[in-house]
Structures are given as structure tokens and as C-alpha cells.
Length: 337
Ligand SMILES: *Cc1c(COP(=O)(O)O)cnc(C)c1O
Image 1 (cartoon, protein in one colour):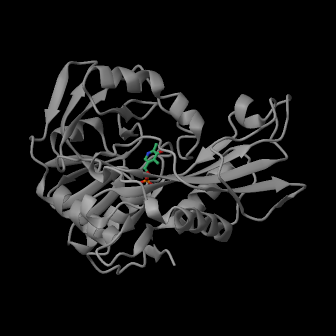
Image 2 (tube, rainbow, N blue to C red; image 1 turned 120 degrees about the horizontal axis):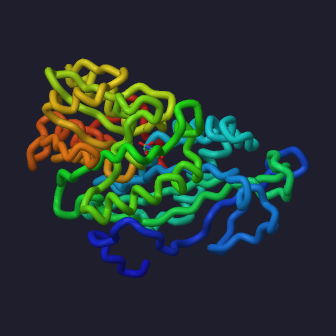
């Protein structure tokens, strides 16, 4: 295995070994196929290219002290991709097939799973696209599912570090009854303008309010939002939020630590009451937030430059389960055989 600088990988595309593919043709899913190519050859009229029939997933595999490789909650990603398929009328890949493909992709690239000491992980990217040709607006008759992987560095190489978010009411990520709750590329295309603007201003992401009334907190561009106060973990309930598996896991762990957990509408005004706030998702697990800047009213909410007590506990606990340092009491981990 080439000598990768495991600690300074960052988060970006990197060529690894084989990827796994599966085609839906003639009304059925075929067998899993192995490919060493980074490219696909698709029809110029594929629905993914014109009408956005595209959904993706993101999950990670971790190498433990014991040398074993663990994949975190891939059944949840499999189910969520099925929900995305329902949302944009794509053929659903069976959950078992999804898990088999992920397992195979990791196994084929086992030498790319970063060592335990590095704090890095193997990022797994499943992707499903409409490949059948259509020029009228309707769902494709053919689909391609791909899983590829790449090692990614620790999200916080210098340690768990709080960042800043920005609120800009001029932009919506998703419509209230739209596709916000599905993990589809279209949502991301729609968020690039404000995402880049946020980065130019030194913010890590946009914090979106609900698109209809701009009264409640929705989520961050690529991560869910939570706030903690009075020993209560609070995360927004909304039809346009992507149901984060990390958030779902943290809610379980929070309960286990004796925190109350509330999933409900979170009014904007409540931002001034939280003792800790954070963003959560597969990439960072938890990004503590030190400041939320409301660019429309030039108001800011400050939460201190050190990660909060509960955020730190939750972060450490979830990472410990992922790396096998803490017992997997909820059955979240699958070993790569
Ligand atoms: C993927 C994603 C998340 C995080 O979900 P995880 O399952 O925790 O990785 C949050 N918000 C959006 C919009 C996402 O696409």
C-alpha cells in the first residue's frame, strides 16, 4: 500500500481501487459488478443529466484498535436512499443489495481504510442515477447504482473546533413541501450560491430558516442543527429537513446520558436561549457552533469559543462506538469480514 499521509488527507475526491456497480434494466436489478474505472458511459438523454433523477448517500467505515473495520449504520443509509427514490420516482434498490454493495466496496479497498491512530476514516459514497433516455419529463426506465470509497482525514485535524454559521433570509434550500427531506443532488445545486457566499464571509455554512415563514430553524446546508439548554437536546422538526442518521444516533446517546430530547419546531428567538449549539452529520459527527450571524439584521448569537460540555460528550461517545472503543449497545456497527 502506498504511504498516504493519513493525518492530512482532508475531505476530497481521491482515486482508490475498485468501485461496485449495479444496473436496473428490463424491469429488474442485475448482479453487483466490479469496476476499476472512475468513469461511466451514459446516454446523452439520461434523466439524471436533464431532470435531476439523482440521489446519493454518505457513510463511513472505521478501523478500530483491534484492526477490525466497522461500517456505521449502513441499513439506515439503504432505507434513506429508498425514500429518496420514492421522492423523485427512481427504482428502489433493495436494502440487502445496497448493504452488500457497500460491504463489497469497502472490502475491495480495505487497504484504504485509515489506521486507527490517524483519526481518519473511509468515506463511502453510494449514488443512484436515472440513465435511461427520456426527453419528455418522466422517470427513466433504466438506472445505475454505484458505490465508491475514499479515505478522508479527521474533520478537525487540530481537534474539535467551533465554527460560525450565517443566516441569510434571501435564500431557501428547499420548499416546505418539496424535496428537502430527500438526499438528492438538486437540493445541493440549489444551495451552492449562498454556500459559496457564506464561505467567502468566513462562515462554515448557511443556517436556513423555514422557507415559508422564516420563523423557525430548519437546518444547515449539509448538516442538521441542534441546540442544548436546561439538560435538553433540541433539534428542529420540519418537512424540509434531511433526516440525518448522525442526529438520530446522537438523540439516542443523549437520552442514554440523561438528557431530555425534543424534536419540535425551534423558533428563531430561541437561538438566544441555547447554552450550546451545533451542526451534525457524517462528515464531522458534530461541529460545535461558536457564533451565528444573522446577516439580514446584523445580529449575532454567541456560544463561546470552546466546545460545550454536552456536545463534547456526545461527540466522544459516538466516535468511540464508531471506532470500537465503546460497546455497540444499539447494534449500529457491521464488521467487514
Ligand atoms: C446528508 C445530509 C445531512 C447529514 O446526514 P447524515 O446521515 O448524518 O450524514 C444533513 N443535511 C443534509 C441536507 C444532508 O444532505
